[in-house]
Image (tube, rainbow, N blue to C red; front, side):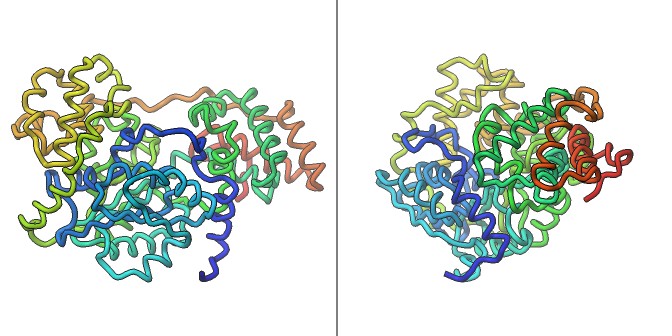
Length: 472
């Protein structure tokens, strides 16, 4: 194995210590909730119809940086004849992922190593689909990795990526710098230091309501979980790249964005982003004022010349449609019915939606969808299309398809945080002062820099920096 560059060595060390997301090994995830992860769904989003897979019939799927959970979920979704390869830097994560798939009747090939190095070794056009969720922003050169993945995709192949929406993470960046080696110097591998970091943020949240809101938005599982806390605030590598950079890098790699998944309904004033990709300007404007805080969850395709041949299409539909009873016996994804517009859908219609979804993504058939549509309210249908529970290709009536792709609201309001307060002279400053003194960094200059970071974390864009001489 070739030596890893220092950036990747730090990332590997983090995930050796904290396999992500570190669910209990005996837990059985609801794999149907991972309906967004598999190659058939990506092909439906990318092609707008049932044009499964790549033009040459490639049936290989690559999971880049799969961690411990994704291989299990994707292997559940991919049919038996689909080759699944998972590569990850961490031996610990790979071991846990291998254990989760140990009793599966469908095999997965596990590799440990650097994604870039692996892609450089393999012949071009090898994969029908690549999944790289939460990976690119931790790579040494994300644009280079994108180009390698583009080369590895067969014509017509698909790629699912999630990358950070950096403008929405400005407050996290300030906390990262506060806890980093130049200020407080938290050791990400020390349990005592992690407790201390939580104590500092907890003290700051008591004095700064805006920071308390931000911390609560992370969810109940982040703060008490060492791995998730370290991944959020103490990661050794995070490329802080804007929305424009990501979308232009995708284009420069010869790829096309086919859809954007709006997990938190922040783009309801735009046409359905899963089928009509918003402009860079529209996303940048909404990220700048806080209307769009979700990460970029993108479905991407490598363009192909011509259509998939009927021979290839027939073979791929047959491959995808085998053993569909395994999926049909499961309940539908819980995410579909966790929104205001979909909570009231009856149990019978939920099951009908699930069966129609499976018909389309696994078999390319839309026959069950048409009789279901009149039973559901327009807003329910619009939400389901934005979630990918129903895909445009399932709707035969082009007029209805256009109507359901329309915006769901005229305008989305920017979120309002509690007023920022300047943290100075209170218990939080006293705690940070004592930590800095104990670590031999008790100069007033260092304390001012640390408090400036906490003050800046209350407002996106670091507007506190104008008055508090924030240093980088």
